Amino acid sequence: MKRTGEAQRGLQPVVELRKEAASYAYSVRAPRSRGVIPPSSYRNGGFATLAECLGDVARAMGGDFARIYVRLDGLCVGERDIVELRREPEKVAAELKAELESELKKAKAACAIKAESLSVPGEG
Image (cartoon, rainbow, N blue to C red; front, side, top):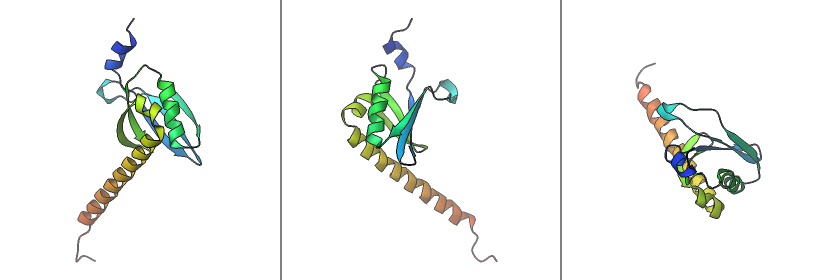
């Protein structure tokens, strides 16, 4: 049987955070090699704030993992230390929201550039 530390080296879970109406929810999954995305292995929800949701993620992960990949509302917003989620959930929540906003602006700009390049001036 592998010790937790040995299992952790080959596996870094992903937490999918999402806003659902007036609350936050999350699910955790463990990607496998070669890009296979398995179904979620754990879900929880009904948290009033993103910070509360992050605190529960930290509790759910226990001491089994040091880091986790984070997705917020469908976009990758980096990876974080579990300890950070436990100690400073409000700070992490603010940073994740800022990163999400940045990613959304990048995506919007890329779509605008693509749409502009597809239009042909002088036709019509």
